[in-house]
Length: 91
Image (cartoon, rainbow, N blue to C red; front, side, top):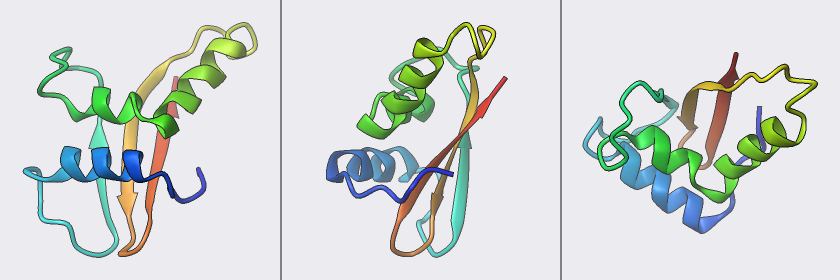
């Protein structure tokens, strides 16, 4: 699990990606995957493009050989009333 997100820019993007999907309450989770390549309508791409999402991309790029070319299958965004978290499924 990634540490809680304190970057305001990332938190703003997460909030914008979630609004319209469901009201934000306590202890909620949302799943996003790259199956829809439409950059304007798939929150996966916005979340992946945040400062916190880029770290996951860099890890996979820098350790491509060790990761055997695996990529990001999905992103789970969690909110626990106070903090945001991004978790990636890699495969």
